[in-house]
Image 1 (tube, rainbow, N blue to C red):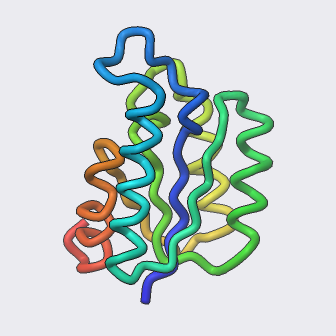
Image 2 (tube, rainbow, N blue to C red; image 1 turned 45 degrees about the vertical axis):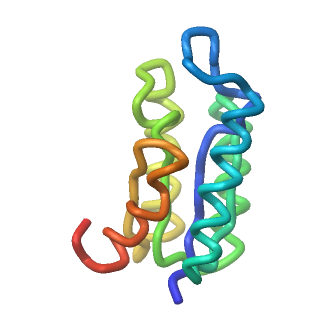
Length: 125
C-alpha cells in the first residue's frame, strides 16, 4: 500500500471569482476525489492549506513529519497559478528536505487525483 500526502489549497483559499464552479461544488469534487483515493486502497492524508507561505509551510512540514511518504501530491491550484509560485517552491523544497524518497504526483484537478497517483505508483510518472 502506498502512503500518500495530498497537498492542496483549502477550498476557501481558492479564488473562484472567474471559475465555472462555486465553493460547494469544489468541496464536493474534492470529497469525491479523496473518496476515490481511499476506495482504491491508498493510505492518504489530505493537507489543505491556505496561500500564506509561512502558515502553509508550517502545515506541510507538520504533515510531512507524521510519516514516511511514498507519494506526495501537489494540487494544480498550487502549481498552475503564477501568484502561488513562491508557495509551490516552498512546498517542493520541504518535500525534498523531509521526504526525499517520496515521488511527486500532480493532478489537473480533484477528479484526476486517483489517475495521477496510479500513474506514479505504477512507475509511469
